[in-house]
Length: 262
Length: 262
Image 1: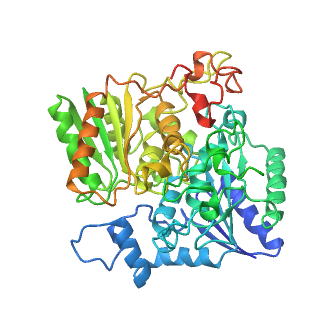
Image 2: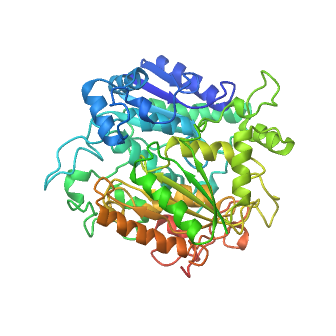
């Protein structure tokens, strides 16, 4: 299968750098084809701005959705953005690999999303009617592809547990897993997270590799997070509120948006 | 009082641009002193990398926490970062103003956090012992200051409601409000969010201004989000798990981290 790794760490001689090398090597040895976008290595332009739409009328007011739609439809996006979109379309699975900085993506990776996820590709797709509200959340351009986060965190695992002070890792990653990946159609795998990475001795690193290897072997067979499809009947249209009675008793917060059979 | 606005939108002739002008004008007319960092206007460097630590040994392995700590302590940070830190220290309240892109900060604003929130200033502060786990979550450098998000969103308000398909706005903003702002000590105000901003006629814009004005008038008197202090007795140390029985019955997900009297 085709795997696309988007990698965001500024130091190749880091734990992330080692894990990235391992990811590439292991995926190839499993028979996959691999492409990597090393965002720091590429000097990726992080900030979405008017330079992303070179075909705009000079002096016209920048309107991100409008200009993104036009650039995507008319083939006037910048070459760096087009190259990333082609890798996404080529891929059967996409892995975003990054250190968790301030409980979210490093800016360079957020900027990859901001710029590459164009109107017509990742949003603004599909019809709006009484039965559908666009192709999103389980439908869309990337339907049938899988996505997975590979994340390092400095804090302890218990700090990210269901009752941990940071908030649970699943809730913290919801804006990424559900909002960035499930939105344009990916089936999203549970994240692979390693904690307390300030203290990684060779033995622990070996354990990480073993655990990651299991996840790579199951990348196309393990069950994805059972998020609810938007247009599958669970949400009212157009309010997009979850219909009453669908949640499990006592089901907390964002877990509402997972199917009951999970 | 002193108010610091960090503003992230690439188009001055946008709704965000108008709201930013209004924020400045209104806060001054209320008697405050205002400083603004217009991140796009400043061509803010979004990506944290080795250039942020000019005092590093050439060729040394980049270690973000270590290098950030050294640069902060030794006064060898870059001038752009120091300028932002001084504005934070000057401020009695900080407002982050931005459009919600992919359910999170635009990359340029995330990169402002990644670079400005140094070790020794925003994290790595305070002692770790049996009774304390650093000065964070309610304590820290910015204790006594207030912070508020001013956010525009394209989607409908109901899509961001407690049962809305996007996830609730409070849960989506938790990594920012709790993880970025409460962590280094800010009292965090409920966010000011305007929805469905693709369709803003003059009447609706007037309503937005009026609603925002009320929030500005209450900036130092309204109640902040009642997040739980980490070292106030609610969490076990060092696991940082919320002690049993503190939550309200049926209290969902991330709301665990708010006090019961909320």
